[in-house]
Amino acid sequence: MNTLGIIIIIAMAAEFGLNLIINVLNLMNSSKPVPEELNDIFDTNEYRKSQKYTRHKTFLELITGGFMLIITWVFWLSGGFNYLDLLLREITTQPILLGLIYCLSLLIGSTLISLPFNIFATFVTEQKFGFNQTTVKTFIGDQIKSLLLTVVLFGLLLSIVLTIFEYSNYAWLVCWIAVTIFTISVTFIAPAWIMPLFNKFTPLEKSELRTKIEDYAANVNFKFKNIFIIDGSKRSSHSNAFFTGFGSTKRIALFDTLVKEHSENEILAILGHEIGHYKLKHIHMSTFIGIITTGIIFFILSIVIELDTLYQAFGMDYQSVYSGLIFFSFLYTPVQLILSILGQYISRRNEHSADKWACENGQDGSTLISALKKLSAHNLSNLTPHPAYVFFNYSHPPIQQRIELIQNLK
Image (cartoon, rainbow, N blue to C red):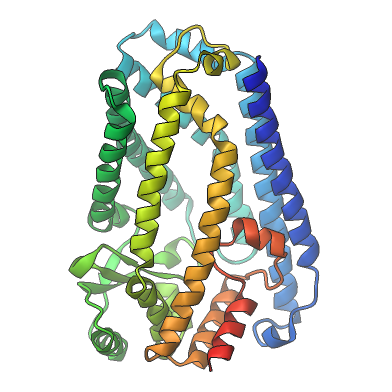
């Protein structure tokens, strides 16, 4: 263990410690009485239930994170990364194939170790609070499909990155271009080929709801290909709505639980918010930021993987591109935290802007507020999150802030 290794361990511990502190603050804040303007979301019993739900999820996340951190340290400090590398070198020394086997072995190992926590979250926590609708058969099927899909897509992307770094003179630049093309391609492929592997997309039949959606979309010049109902209720009673695809291929996707629990005008208000994201170019901005961030990451990576001290910190006998990628992810932790905070801040601003756009383009603010309150009630949302927790973790503003903004617009 050298100085760089000690720095990485301290950074990982600091990140977990910071996460622990803000979660404790959030739990303390969740015991506050419900704000007066949100009294109509929960009755007393439901509010207590939402507080318990927040506590259960928080404890499980902290236990999971702490356990995975300890496992990582034990594996690292016992020479696990080097031992796995030496073991696989007895099978092959071809750098690309060796790198694929090495990284996928770590990925599958991590997935299996975290599997009991996923099972507990689904069949204990979500079950206890009435959200889980997943059968054992569906859960097993999802895990197998997710693992196979990850192996295929991750394996393909990793093979591209390893090949470029092994044989290209301008690896970081070529990788940046290749990964950008790959990511955008998957975005186009996902709605038609990946998402249907997990959920059934049924076109919304001719109805008053469909007519209202089509009329509103035409009024705000929003083009889409079709409207689908997703059988989200076979896994969870949580509600959601989203768009997939780009340009004229966009699809509107509504969870069946959303359609069941909300009025047609409330659904329209939610879609107005989502359309606002497109009209305000939030999707384009997010994609652009992601592309720039990817380029910066690959540039830094190209420098870091040449450092002998990086491999010494993990006790490696051989230096390789694939192990360098793994170790760089640990070293990148502080930078990732900063980027995450910035990303969450931008996302919260965009959510406010989308609410404002919807209210200024045909949607009634009171109806949008009613829809947001129902979503909060059905999802047992924490109505009093601590500001520090919001700062680090929330991609959406707390519902109280969203309601105040909409009321000020009125």
